[in-house]
Length: 288
Image: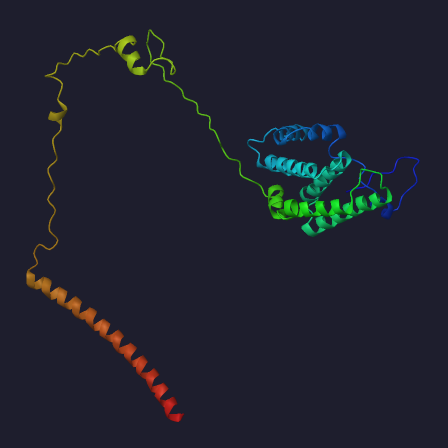
């Protein structure tokens, strides 16, 4: 947590003194903390949503997780009876640790060290100012450490994924534009798509289409069936025409002999290779 800049006229303080001072600002104001204290869990969630200015909880996973982070932390601190100033400091601590992760890209070990520094300042100030309710006791500091261990630190990788990994936008709707074609020379307008169906419109409202008059009679108009004359099937010649059975058997016999001879040659070559390998092994055994 960054220390506040000194005001004009104030004496300069060394780094050690500034680190020993508590934070000079609060994540939530005292009036906001007071409003949250009087709410149940549902009211607390709605109030926190308003204070954090979250507007997209239904579609934003990030806002939903952050709201749960702060609501859970506040409810836990309320259950163990933190005072209003202590609640304010605790919520500031939650914000600072999350800001270290999201904005400063701080590793888990470094963020744990920042927690230790912040609690050391608050607990040490309590020992010096026992009547000040802004600070925590040693037991309260240990309880805060245990809570952050099982909430933020245990799921640190998930929070890193939330802030650092881009997510695809899900398309939950699509806009479609439908254009209706208009008929030419209609005395009535086309039906609306939310009005009557096209069947009723074409049957009872739309005027009949004009019949085209032709000078040709049915006898003069050639029938499509008459015009259609199937083409004569082309007779394909048999490629084996002119060859006898003896010629075919002769050709097949030659092909078979060539294939068998090739296979026998490959087998003999493999047998010779294996024979040489066995002879080498036998010679080695004899020498041994």
